[in-house]
Length: 293
Ligand code: NAP
Image: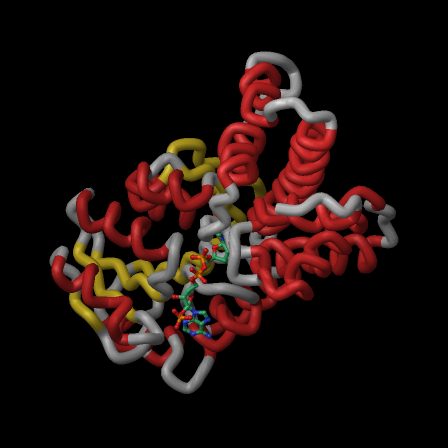
């Protein structure tokens, strides 16, 4: 059993940390808002005042925060992991961030004798709670093997994709597929509604065929029930598509479908729905044709 630091106790981080505790690992946790640490402390974790303090006790420090600058701050900031981590320990960033930044952070940590894996996830809050996340990792194979038992406590489909940054590239690819599918589901259910046909029955009929997907199942249900509690916040989906578009620009690559999805997410966040689940995208599709909610 390992001594693990866990930084970032939001929608995803909290259940992931709880699953590590349940698997028998010792946890030192840090949340920016102290109240986010209470459920973990009740379950047996030690609450820490900073990422550095948590890392001081750990062989592996897991980070699950929002965006690239947040990961940078948690690792390299004034009270960041680097000020507590021992040489030989590892930092595992499970947030979704830029692949280039993931490579740069790994190189900087290695200078101090600390290893790094990028290990973003897919599967949403439900996957985090059920410990069935898909984990796509980038880094050295020996570090990946060391951390594997921790991944197994949080996920099911665990793949070392390649070197540092490769996990984040896989996650960007994941988001290209998710965004296009989400768009398709929102448009299909809106077509059903405008046609005067029960969208719930359409979803049910489509689930068994080639149009069936986890997005149709989970997000389609949210669209029909108008349940837009997050889930996956629209502003984080927008952040992910921005990572995709940045990579496309750097590579000189045309990704017109992802670019269109990005515009829809801009519209959704710009409408004030950034804190709601990305399934709220259906509202933008509806508004374009004058459909009332
Ligand atoms: P969330 O609920 O917004 O939680 C993010 C957590 O990170 C919050 O507790 C936040 O603290 C903390 N945080 C952010 N910036 C920080 C900083 N600079 N220093 C310290 N703590 C900081 O988001 P989430 O849904 O858990 O997502 C976390 C990551 O997983 C994101 O990269 C997201 O893209 C990715 N992801 C999410 C899902 C999903 O379905 N939700 C699925 C796959 C991947 P405060 O509470 O103080 O704001």
